[in-house]
Length: 308
Image (cartoon, rainbow, N blue to C red):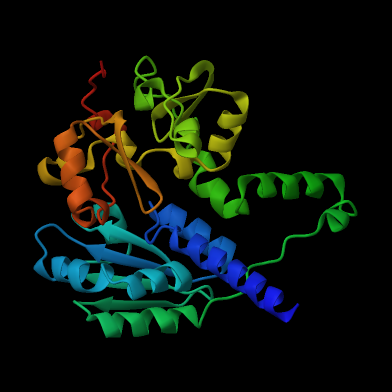
């Protein structure tokens, strides 16, 4: 009996470690990092990088490519990487002039900032110190407790539960849904394929016009009402990175060229689309230069080209 108990415990532990390893190292946006921090109680770490930054490249190679650093980024903080030269508004908000730089926002409102290149061991120490200052997030009422609340408060709790992370998610993601009309509703994102079906089944299935949602200025279509609902609850989980633009061309040439859903790769739990197999192969061989930047591409910049 004891042997079976130990084996069962080991199986659970292996499953938990495997699940943790599949979580993304970097959050797609600062808003996503804030939502994750609100849900889990961990500090927010904002790492600023820049164009033609030699020290940033060294940190990519010697620090962020390290498995132990990646694990610590997943568990101790809600991390996001910002390119100072592309996301100038965010850099100005934090007063960033030199890169590389790290800003840690603690749950108690305190802030810490480090400027300059850090070695692997020093960075691990920074992450461990940040992790020790996490706070337990507010507990959500049980169903039995909700039923004793006034009706209006019950509706509020249900709305927050549906979004997955309460007010933080509502402000960061849901507010972007249909907040503005699609720039080109006749040319939907991902060539009209359902992003939810693609993520859950890795299958291209045409979306239906009656199940549509605008997210970050792009119109997405869904194959069913249920898939539409799943997207609305967590759009950044399903929407492609960089508004579906080819990340290789975006990084190297600063041109927003739409990718083809048939030319796709998953990296760090996120979907990337490519305009050619050459771009996809280059990304596959060395993804970090094209994923460490969270670009400030706008939907108006998209060079619309219909995929044949």
